[in-house]
Image 1 (tube, rainbow, N blue to C red):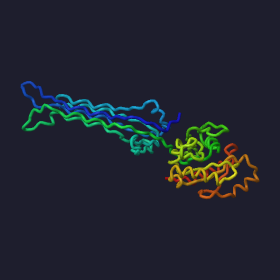
Image 2: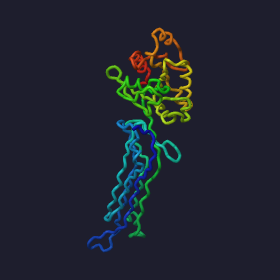
Image 3: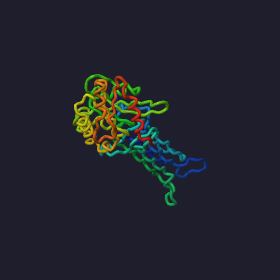
Length: 329
């Protein structure tokens, strides 16, 4: 199951209390202060992992707490620090403050770590408070409480190419043709109910990733259809590949409508490189395709690319063009 949103509660460990203790040695009836310091509370740490692809685990567990630090002991023994809690999340996870919606961390690289909450500092034992005028202090410092917070986790897929199109434009068929991804495919709208990420092996030793996003409809940026639930996943892609059915009556109108939904959701999307293709060309006569191939789409960054995922026609040319235009950073 693909889950890309979760709300959880976090509590870092409290610091251990400092100890009040005095030396008890033979022949030293009034030993000095010997209380140890309390240990530090454990931190809450998030780590991005490339082998994870969903926030499903957080559907069943909503609270995470790190261990408290141990209290200080006698004979100047310091308490043990509380163990940190390391929470693994997919690469592309954004951590937000649930109360303010402020973005705290963006874990967009494999292995990247973020200390989201810090454990409380341990209290000092009475050995730290001895002075010439108070050589036997009978007090110690309590440990500091650990931080606590409610956070939101949002997953945004990271891919080179984001597929954009109306329901049933052929996005799922294309990604199943060019990669090992196997999304559900059927002849009715909204077959794809969750994003799919496919790795395309290009030529011998090269590859790139493609994200199949559920179909966009007019009003998607307002939450209509599958709406806002999935539009976030194309924000990180380097290139947008628009798929329009070759049987459409007006290619420019369809492209404008799709582009307007993206712009309304995020102006940043409008600045990405936009490649326009016509899918399902096996449904059109060869003579008609020659006329169609000469058409121009305004406000796009590519010639009109034609292909059929069903027959494989035009697929090689499409992949060549995509590879040539992916920013190599």
